[in-house]
Image 1 (cartoon, rainbow, N blue to C red):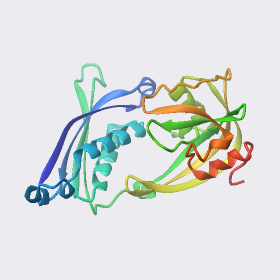
Image 2 (image 1 turned 120 degrees about the horizontal axis):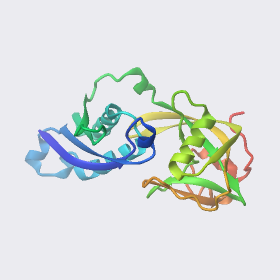
Image 3 (image 1 turned 90 degrees about the vertical axis):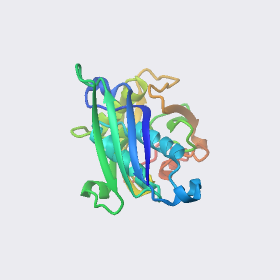
Length: 258
């Protein structure tokens, strides 16, 4: 049996041009899922995919991804669909309208099935991230996905051709509009976890971070995240991840992996 989702609209970063990286664009997603025949007989939600919950997971993944390519966004969305044990295959279409003058829309379609081999880079699942330790007046700057119980140090993915410091400064500018300086290299924190039902790993390059002008309040330019200053003694309460960073509560000048 097929379950079809159509017209899920998401505001997210999707594009390669500088102006596309600085603002969210509205995209539309549709999906055709193979879910088996059980629900057609039992009339029980437990026997099929919960499309309301799946829609929220798709929205979260697309917002968090900050993709450059439609193809990558469609691939990640298809992976999210397959996390549900009742979905055996997923065909996902991601559409962006008005991307090019004179072109109505552009779409990418990805079809994945359980058991299909993944490319080597997908199996690796390792990301390299630049993170900043910004401490002022006994408080540290943290970032949090809205509604989440956990937080993390500000920063983001290092793009091809960037140094870690360049990536950290760029991410702060994109997410807050503030200029910043990436200072001393404080070390490396490795982390592994399960994301969308799959093993995942990240390598965090950690730098000292200062905001030019010493801004007291940091407002987010992105709808899905917020920034907050927390006391160094509240890092466990703030749910700071990876947990290795909670050492900063005892020693704000701590070094990692060195």
